[in-house]
Length: 369
Image 1 (cartoon, rainbow, N blue to C red):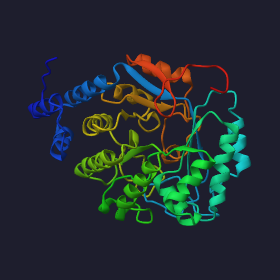
Image 2: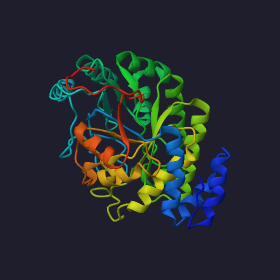
Image 3: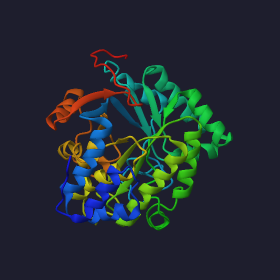
Image 4: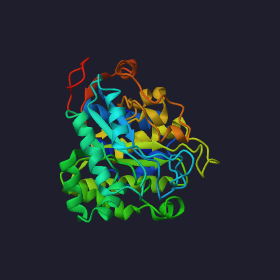
């Protein structure tokens, strides 16, 4: 189908896409620079439609943020607390059990677990956390611990990285979420999160995770102090790792929320930037199959629009999300399955409930799949 643009700089990018040639950094910069948002979106939608047709995915999931005590105290984080500080918490295994049992009649297929790097917790705490979830939700995939958390666990387990991953898998770990990279750039790392592992180490740990047979997501936190070129090069570095390992399942652009952080003076991302970032990710990440429009960060309405700008997944029902809401997110803390499907059908797409690995599942009203 012939396609024309308001911005002539998009025509050679279309030629590359149609020829099956990979976009480079300069192409990514041109996409971001283009004032033709609709044209960029049409390019991304063409790629999205070729991969997924009218399908748009979501998962029935539950979030457990097990602790907000964190030694890293990144400048962009509103979630972290020091031990003993007002608002600091760490769930016991019994409290996690209680949270899971409170939703036991719902057909939850994925339990998403992330928290702070809490130096007071022994390695056995994490194994107990996983075994507790597996006991309560034996049919759900446990997606737990970012590469940052896993690097910390390898340091306290005494088992090395391979042994740590094996122990976590034995306890129930089934997949790894994508956070912790933020922006794979030394300047941004040193300015915003110097206590956290840097981008090189994040890529190393994620490669180890992939080699262990675990799939993972990848993310980009955008809308703070990073430059557009740093965003594009971040995507390229993720693409290069995916070339080597094939372990990334989905990419998730995360719009920065500044409230209650040490960057609270920064403005919120715009809808234009949010949609442009989704579209550029779809076009640059040719070897990662799925792009999420994470409704928690951009809101439900913009997430609907993002389905026409390259995204094919709205993430999930969530149930209770803490990290972004502590930074001022105005979105609900969870959505019902019916609301997820209404958002997707209202945007003109076909809702597909999936498991963590993008396998379609049948809708149910009972608890266990």
